[in-house]
Amino acid sequence: MKFSQQLLEAGQPILQAIYQHPFVEGIGNGDLPKEALTFYVGQDYNYLNAFIKVYAAAIQKSQTRADMAIFAKQIDFILNSEIHPHHNFCNVAGVKYETLQHEPQAPGTYLYNEHMYRAARTGDLIDIVAAMTPCPWTYLEIANRFVKQGKNTDDNVFKPWIDFYADMSHDEDSILQQMYDLIDREAEKYDQHRLDIVKEEFLKSCEMEWKFWDQAYKQTGWRFVKPMKQYY
Ligand SMILES: Cc1ncc(C[n+]2csc(CCO)c2C)c(N)n1
Image 1 (cartoon, rainbow, N blue to C red):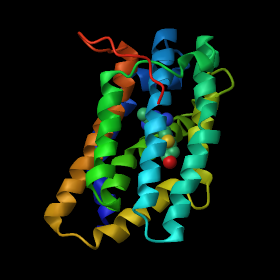
Image 2 (cartoon, protein in one colour):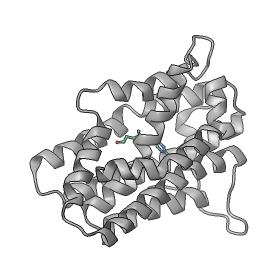
Image 3 (cartoon, protein in one colour):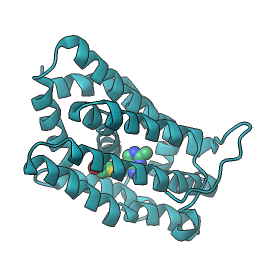
């Protein structure tokens, strides 16, 4: 079995838990508290800034223009397209997007961002991509499942969110396929022990995807520290 397939198989239990999380179920049912939505957007804005920088690190470790182009396209996607699902959440919450772009970083966001930065700092290209893949993987699976269940109806206020992420799979050279191909190509270079480490990095990101929904749903901040506003 291809290594990318092994990763997805190992991640299945976490994906199932994500499906069942009340935040994710709330997207399907068009019903979420305003506080959960605004907390999510504030944290996701911060997370996506880190994601862009980690893509930049992936470009630094790329050895071909073809690889560079994959990451460059994704940086453009985050900067110019991924504002749409954020706008959807902000519109439903009745909050201006601009007011959520300097939120203090919550612990779950810190952990996820630092996990990716660590891969960028100490890992190879495969470590970076493995830590990043749960992000598009879980969102695409969530959105496609909702489309299959017919949840993206006109009366669901989160229809734009569902349609946006489900659309990602219609792309000819979809980001996910490119990431799987890259992982499988790079996996050839390593022994089983090294690949076990990569798998753990992938699974940690899967768990942090679950945690990201959970911290927004519960608005989990720091217990004692009062962190500063974020300016990148
Ligand atoms: C916590 C969190 N996880 C995943 C996404 C979704 N997402 C972020 S960047 C990107 C494109 C990947 O190249 C996708 C699909 C999100 N917004 N927030």
